[in-house]
Amino acid sequence: MTTLIESEEHKDLRAAVAAFGKRYGRDYITQLVDQGAYPTDLWQEAAKLGYIGVNLPEEYGGGGGGIAELSIVLEELGAAGAPLLMMIVSPAICGTVIARFGTDKQKQDWLPALADGTRTMAFGITEPDAGSNSHRITTTARRDPDTGDWLLTGRKVFVSGVDIADATLIVGRTEDSRTGRLKPCLFIVPRDADGFTRRRIDMELRGAEKQFELTLDDVRLPADALVGDEDAGLLQLFAGLNPERIMTAAFAIGMGRYALAKAIEYARDRTVFEVPIGAHQAIAHPLAQAHIDLELARLMMQKAALLYDAGDDAGAGEAANMAKYAAGEACVKAVDQAVHTLGGNGLTREFGLASLITAARVSRIAPVSREMILNYVSHQTLGLPKSY
Image 1 (tube, rainbow, N blue to C red):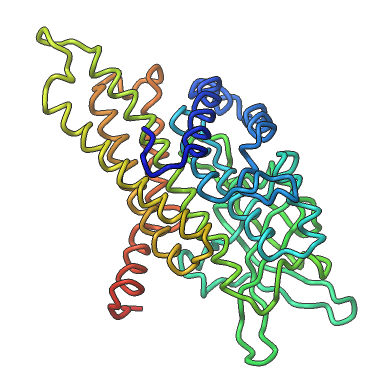
Image 2: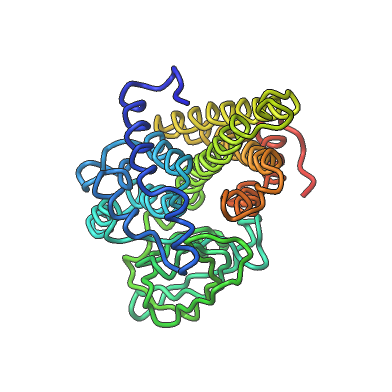
């Protein structure tokens, strides 16, 4: 499923990652989930091959590519049944923000380790009472006038992989000395920081990465825990959120492709009334439509990645939101049709599709709901007034 608009390098990367992913596959991930373990072997080997840090700068041990390359890696791992959710968080969000806005010391401390897979970083933005309204974030950071340290207080929810991450990039708010208004800032919070506690959220979703609620109770951080400029605000925040949307699209497209491939294989082999069920248009056409929808979503994802890697943050914002929306819709439909194609077998553990029903819904909900994306497009693209 390569496309003509990809360069030869991208095609080679796609083929290499696809072959690598098949050596692990869905059974490997499922067994680890059953054991409550994390796919460390997959992560470490992917990092050794240069896949985890493909988007990070070469001078810090990365591949020197961009989100376009990283999205190919995640999509192909997903299509092989072995996606790595932390790729969205650690190299895509946190790695990108630090590479673009971090101090020299932060880059030296984190980027080589993020690239070679020896360290990971989680990302905390969502709050219990804020939801999608980032302007209502209540996690605050204030300076200690005596030491210059930062003190963070607040709560975060649905933060992935905190238990395996070495630190979490926390979105907080500081007071603007000129206006008195609160502005967003990002802080690197070590996993073992005093006052930084976590509680696992009991999820129906079965995945290797666990979800957590975080509490920050006057967490004391050194002055250099702040990433970038204290006054940059939303610019730095969206430097991470656009890659997050693009990578979520890649995650969804990979999942949809995996489900579709299983359904196609079954429709070719399963014979009823003397012909394979795939010969019936009632089966074939919905699968064909699912393929079309996934391909269209990928085109928008590629556009978003191209714009982002070219430095067009505004254009990438629109395209990244559209890509995430399209991929989420395509993924849910592909998984649903795959399960329906297999009938009762689609709900058995043997075929491994039933668990994707829940997982696919995540691509509609996180990191931003499809309704908020429609709000974004109606306001930002169409120029329609807001209702809030």
